[in-house]
Image (cartoon, rainbow, N blue to C red; front, top):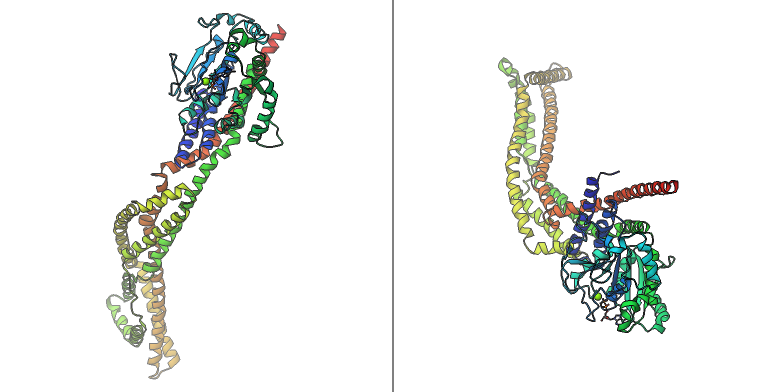
Length: 639
Ligand SMILES: Nc1nc2c(ncn2[C@@H]2O[C@H](COP(=O)(O)OP(=O)(O)O)[C@@H](O)[C@H]2O)c(=O)[nH]1
Ligand SMILES: [Mg+2]
């Protein structure tokens, strides 16, 4: 079993994540209905699942009377309660906040730690139904209309009263364990003030009584709320109002034909929604015993009673339906967010592709043509080091004379073959034009895609306003830091080559001896080939030169490798100081400062996980409760 503090943390997390996602999607222009579904999912977590897991009593069950403005919701509330408690008003859109009618004194319920009904506050004093605030009211319905219905507490009173109610008894009110919610009138989507209040009650409800009058049975907005309730798995009872008594069955037929197809998710799964009627009555038939004995009213009452007969089971059904709704929605709920993520992912890829091109262009246009002359100096330094020290200098001079023809040929060739130095563009200029190309490509892509998603539009707009200037400013700063670090490092690199060798005396001595041995062998080889005559000197020069060619090649190979290493290192520095920070900054930019993007990633991962976890907790909670009730019934039968 999960700790209560852990459980609360989990519930709070899921509810907050759903809310965050809703706000995020709203900013990105997501349509109303998916946002309402998101809200409803959060409401179900707060108002149904949380209280259930905290062992809140199944009594009272919540009935919500829902429907278009002026369809007769308040009239139906009165019918269910069995006396006139709710203000019926001919003005459409009159009721602006929910009011709960408690028909049983025990029906008061604990206020949940997460705040019952979200941000709605309970109004302690009675206010008119048209008070347009985020409040709800609770009114305890009394037997006489003034004193609380105390007698309902006595054993057997409940059963008696229900029986009485069904038989049209004059006893009032009906002390069944319900809270009947009179909901705000639905007008248009534009008047969203009432929507969140309505969704709080829809999410909370165990049973929804959907009211539609013969004048306005097909209005779009109420029908969409009905769809929402059905989709959320609520027990729905439809009550049609205001028709002539003789037209009841034809109206029911008509309603089913027109509206049911809009509610049905699949044709193979026929809807099991009862449709009842409350025909038009004269005002004097709508009060007192006339009201309570009305057979249509009794039929409606009976229908609700069937659903709520076993409160524990009814509540469990609400919880299970809520969980099912969450599971079913989670993919779809996250779909709009997935789209955002895709755009961000796509933007990221574009930025990184641009970065790659930026780096490559730097290599191509600057690094590859940069001669890095210090490395040639280093090579000459290395060649010098083979000169022998002290008395052996004589030998060095001797060999240098022998190599003079080779050196002469080498210098002449170098001068005639040397290509004119390619025009070397400055490092800063290369980087700057690479950056311009990078930004131009991104801008073009953003404009191309701006029709597809608001996020792209936002990016494209950014290019029109300050974005480019911001990036350039960062580029300047980054470039300065790069220069500082790079010049230090390059200096150190080239001078390190000779220095390292000089510091290692034994290796140096070894190399010198090796070179000397090769030179001597070259002399011997010359003598051996030429024999003892004057031509021998030519052979000696040739062999000594060959040795030198070999040494020169090795040195060149070694130095070129070092040069290449340095180039790679320089690319690394460009990435480290310039292109990577810029790319990182640009990737984060569309999600306003980085946190929103991170959060979106987190939330999209966390919500399904949280819902899965809740599912597990509920399963074990069900099992636990099942065990308890089994023990209880064993005890009862045993005693
Ligand atoms: N005479 C009569 N008036 C009705 C009946 N049903 C609803 N009304 C009137 O229609 C108007 C709207 O009803 P109301 O219950 O306030 O609708 P709501 O806006 O959905 O709560 C009120 O003036 C009611 O008195 C009925 O059966 N008979
Ligand atoms: Mg009303």
